Image 1: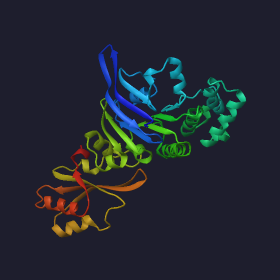
Image 2: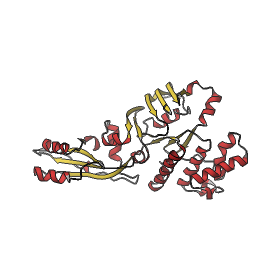
Image 3: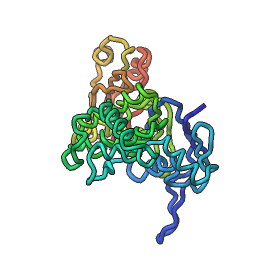
Length: 343
C-alpha cells in the first residue's frame, strides 16, 4: 500500500483579481519509506501541493489518501490526530525564539499531554539524533541556520511521525550546510523508516537525496518517475531547464558557455558507470575528420550513482553529422537533441 496517494487534486483560490488555479488535476503516489522529490520553479504549485498532503490546505477537488484513508473523511478531531503522523519542516524554521532549543522540541510533546520529565527526556534523545544535544539550553538566536533547521527536524520527529514533509527546507542554507542537512534526512529515513517528501526548486537537492521525483509547472505534474531516469532522459521542457541550471552545487552559477554558441546542432549525452571506457568522442573525431565542440562536460551524483553529462556542438555546415550521431549510438550511448538545454 502506498504511503501517500494524490488523486485528481485541484486547488482554486478566489481573489480580487479572479480565480487562481494553483493545482490542476494532480496525481501521484509516494511509496512507504521513499524519499520523494517535488520540484518546480517559483509558482509551480509545489508548496500548495505539500500543504494539501496534511490538509493545511483543503483541496477544491480530489482526494488525499494516507495509507489508504482519505483525509477528507476525518472529523476535525480525527484530522488533528492524523496530523501527528505527518511532521513538517519549513524554509524559515518557525522556531519559538523566546524558548530554548530543548523547549522548542518539547512543545509538540506538551500538546500531546506528555509530562515535563517525559517530554524533556524525549527531546534530549532527538537532539542527540540531530547532533545538537550540547546546545539544548541555547536559544535559537545563538544558532546558525543549519543548527536551527536541525532543531526544527528534531521537533518534527517528536510525535514519531510516519511521514516528514520538507517545504524548501534547505533553500535558506549555504551549499555545505544543505549537504549536511540532506545527509541527516537520509539517515533519518534509513534509521526510522520515515517516508520523506521534499519540496524544492533545486535539482541538486533532488539528485542527492531522492529516489523518485515529480516535476511541476503551472499547477500540473508534467513528468514523474525515477530520478535517474528523468535526469538521463528528461522529456518536458521544464525538466530540461532544471537540469540545465543544475551546476552540481548551489553556489552562484555563471552563464554556461554553450549559451553563447549559436548556429550549431547540439546533442546531450549521459555517461553512466556502465558506459564503455573507450574514448568515444576522440575516436569519433579521428574517424570522421570533423570538428566537434564540447560545450559542457561534468559529472554529477544522481541517486548515489556517478553520471557524466556532456553537451556536444556540431558546427554549422558539418557534412557528416547524421553519421557521427549514429556512431555514438552504435557504441551504446543514448543521445538526445540538446536545444532544450540552451537559451
